[in-house]
Image (cartoon, rainbow, N blue to C red; front, top):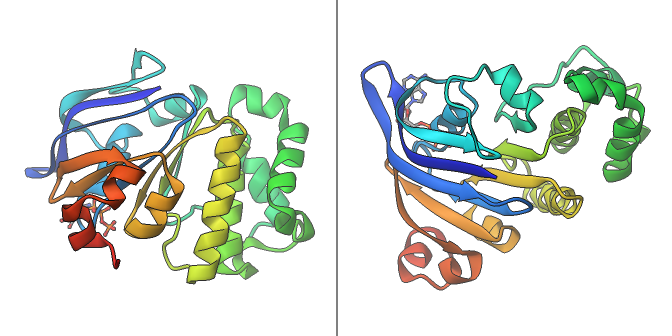
Length: 234
Ligand code: ATP
């Protein structure tokens, strides 16, 4: 569904991602894992055309998207949740969700989309009139994901969904991601929590210093000596 080939990207003259290739098949749950500063966020920003490419090709549903304005990429069904979570603190939960439904056909189906989000996140339904700024970190992550789902994505791109969350809340968040995938939405996520991520996803790419150093099914990576030494505690 999403195919990235030989991606090179950076900031002005500073290249931080070299020749990175990966793909996310329809219905799959795929991660790019790696430590702080490896270039994970930069890669996602390039996919969403929030950064110009230095080289490479990106297709979504077999159509090239390099140079496509980000709002059009979203219209085509590829929606990103940034690390910052991008919710509006001074608006209620419900109003944040309404704002998520800005694509043409999401607007037409706003009511059922909202019901779907409240079904996945009953906590948001309970807090629908509460201001987003007063939510806990975990609830704000739910709201960010819910808001992205309001755009009716075919693929969600999540930038470090675990960031700043307590371990138990991370587990809840990962369960929610699992449920979203079960509803037919493909997921690409980047994460530093390698162990938990490998338990969640089907397939992962390991990014180090801007390059993919290895890739494989979660099961294979969990037994890969290099991955175990660098990222796993068992
Ligand atoms: P993190 O978990 O810290 O977000 P990451 O793997 O997502 O790590 P990136 O944020 O993509 O890494 O950063 C990769 C490299 O690019 C780092 O060396 C970082 O300092 C650099 N970088 C990131 N943003 C900018 C920017 N706006 N201008 C210049 N350099 C940047």
